[in-house]
Amino acid sequence: MSDTDNAVNDRSHAKGTKWVSLYHARQCYGGPEEGGWWYDWMDLDHTVRVVGFEEAQRVAEAMRAELAGVRDRDRSHLIPEGESPYGDTEGYIPTGFVVSDGHRVLVEDRPGEWQTTERPRYE
Image (cartoon, rainbow, N blue to C red; front, side, top):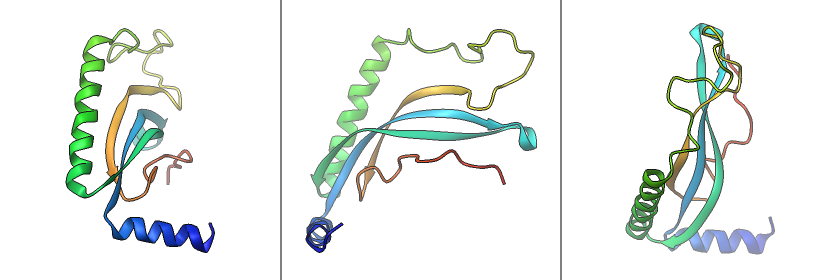
């Protein structure tokens, strides 16, 4: 990033720039350690630049309302809760299995700051 880019980013931040970001969010099975653990995988779908926190909240609420309407109309792509796409596995959950699939709208200081870039490790 150049000094000019940094200066522009500093001015934008000083003026109260916020980003309203839409993420495709999935809850994934990380592995069987300690009885099983899960993590959220967040892919950035879209982001909108706004000025001011109140405006960001307004835009975020409008995006959430739009998403709620879409979810109510089309649920055919979802796997019923508690079912595995792998059939009867007698309690086995493969690593990386996705339980929930949806979207999240977040207000951020930088675009994409909640995007997942690598699978977490169990420690």
